[in-house]
Length: 501
Image (cartoon, rainbow, N blue to C red):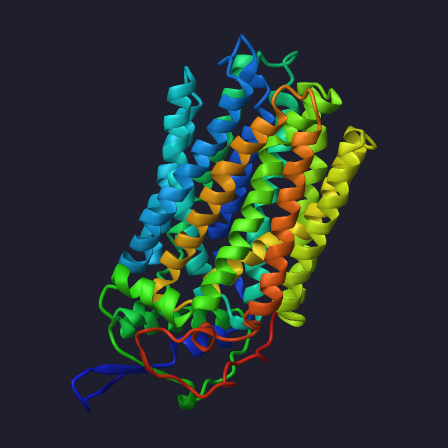
């Protein structure tokens, strides 16, 4: 359905594309989207976990012989690359399309992360990791946009949170692989950490061909005047679903949107929309993304150093502690994700942030008074981040839902960039300083207090400023700038059969 409206100076078209996308039952197509695009978080989890796991190995004289501060700075530089990549590729994703960008960004990561395995000193390592980080940062903007625009509204929350949670599947894989690669009795120290950096690219190459089967976002196409192309894509997806034996309820013409081709959005218009039209949503996005980023990067990048220096855990044993931590983080979004669609975004986001922050305060105090050992400290981290992981994933979900389609990629990239710089780039470096030579627990305790306080503040912001986006069409949450007229509120299909297992 594509009809031109001739009245007035602006030529518009009517389309059922958004309604049809939300009306679909769960299908093989949606699993393809989840698997091929969700690989981003697995790859990032691999890299961050390997960065943490090899942190003590890189300080050995027979490897790169880096200091504690240099190791944590390497992690910060990787995250800085993610910041720059998100800003650059986020804008391109809104301008050129989601599909082009998620092919380019994956390629950038594959090449330069693989090359980082050949690093011969500190500078060669950080330059290559910076460029690889750009690829992953670009992935976050393009992939989150594509996923939200392709997944039916009633499944979007649990699917997005679960996909973001697969970061920890990558972390768990890295923990298990590290058991062999970082056992210096099996593999020489200067080889094990290099092999670890090839694992992600090998996995990425295996998914490359599958990504080519993901179409451009039909929602993005209609905002760029390519309504017929968008409707062809939707028709093909529907035909495949029906061929599999599933029914698709009819969508009435009353659910059509009337759209016009929207010109490339300027930075001034982005500022106007985000700051003047949606100021409370901007505060919400900033708060959720920054607080969770600081907490995660502070704890995750220094976890191995804390276990080694304060609890005497040897290098070869560190993966045994990382693995349950990663599994807890993975299970959290899978277990709690459906409730973000059932109970609602505001209640679940605020509670996960506040509860995890409160538990971190308790954990930090017990660490400070010396009441924990390596095992009990890890158990507490597992409990805290079982809850915090779902909350952190919901931060990405929130910023990808609450702004108009035409600047969705850029909105994600801005909040990702701000959060990674304020929380990700600074946190590992800062906590590295707080740890120092581990002569006192007090500085690190106050770091934990600060991180916990940030999470609690983020939860309070969500409680007061949260958006009730559950089971709503993206067009109902934030009207696209290209939409001239949209259906009356409450017409989003929510009863079509099928659900992800």
